[in-house]
View 1 (tube, one colour):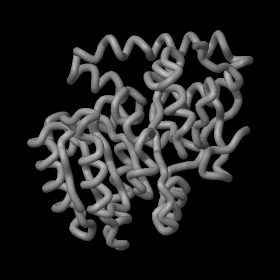
View 2 (tube, helix red, strand yellow; view 1 turned 120 degrees about the vertical axis):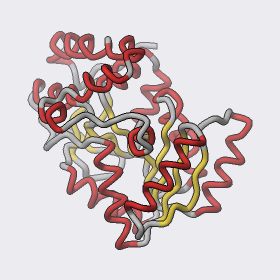
View 3 (cartoon, rainbow, N blue to C red; view 1 turned 120 degrees about the horizontal axis):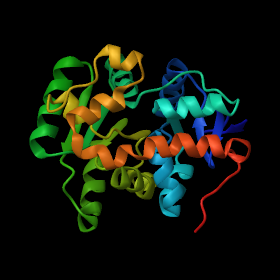
Length: 257
């Protein structure tokens, strides 16, 4: 057992990426402390697709290992941890984690900045979150269509809004590296990539029904909604086969350059 970048959090190492063993409740408690202490914290909601991407790209692997907290979002990660005898407490879905933080933030007056997706989706997401969580403050929002030349402006906008929570919804190969690169400059207590969460909140996509969630088949429901994701989904069986093959050395293995 190892520890995460935030200190005493017990973790399991999957190819050098340290996944938190904390359950949802304790994860919320930890992040609440980070907000109270104003300590910039990058949270990654890790899944098998991200692990496989990290094994193919050393730069992305550095992003994953450089995060302050990696929670086991994907069902495959939960399985892999148990398979090697280092089980996590439970799956910590990023979508649920985001909503639980927003709900808690109502009583604490937390400020939230939303970054990513299209202008229409981000505007609708902001409006719906204001309605659902009237106790929080949407400190600002901006769509995800910006490049490196715009980074300084985006960072300045976020800093001036002084948020407690920053949720970023861009492509995985963009959102995690972007947060990792600028987390010190951003200075936000909790910064988390949330992928397609804004699309679900805005009603563009539907979240998997509870039956799919209970059967741990959310990935299948997402694929049915977006067949174009099939190439990415091929990483799932590859991950399972690789974990089974690498069981003995799993916690120590690193990708080669």
